[in-house]
Structures are given as structure tokens and as C-alpha cells.
Image (cartoon, rainbow, N blue to C red; front, side, top):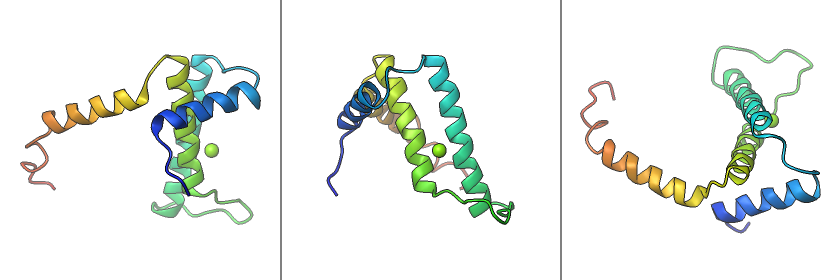
Length: 110
Ligand SMILES: [Mg+2]
């Protein structure tokens, strides 16, 4: 399986929305969709690692697929708001690395 860059992933989602879909949902609809998908991740995590059991007859979705759903909606929101996730990710990691340089090593709870 070939690796996919963030830029390629953004382009793939754009292509999907413009061909399989008709147009982008509104930004606020995609925000609601993102929250729905995060909830689906929480459901899988709770039933896999938490205290909730899975009811008989209910389907347990795969965590990987639900995480991919979240990622896809994030990519769509990035596209429709003009966000370059490659640049944003690199800048964000640099910010975290600088800001948290000693923070976690000095945390006695870790
Ligand atoms: Mg889902």
C-alpha cells in the first residue's frame, strides 16, 4: 500500500466530494458531521477499552474505519476553509515541541 501525503489526502477528499458527492456540505454541517464521527470513535473505544459491553445483535464498527471517518471530515473542513494541513501540521508540531520541551519530563504524574 502506497503512502499518502496530507496534501494528496486533501486532494482525494476534494475529488470525492466533487464527483461522488454534489458539493461540499456547509462548514457548520461538516462540523456537526465531525462531532458525530468523533462520537462513533468514542463508542468503539468505550466498548473495546472502557466499561461498556456491546449489546447482542449490534454491530461493532472497526476503530480504524471510524478514525478514518474523522480524518476525512477534517480534510473536508480544511479544504473548504482554505487550510493547508501540511503547513498547519508542521507548524503545530513545532509549536508543541517548543512549548512543551520540558513540560512532560517535569510532570511527576507521568
Ligand atoms: Mg463513522
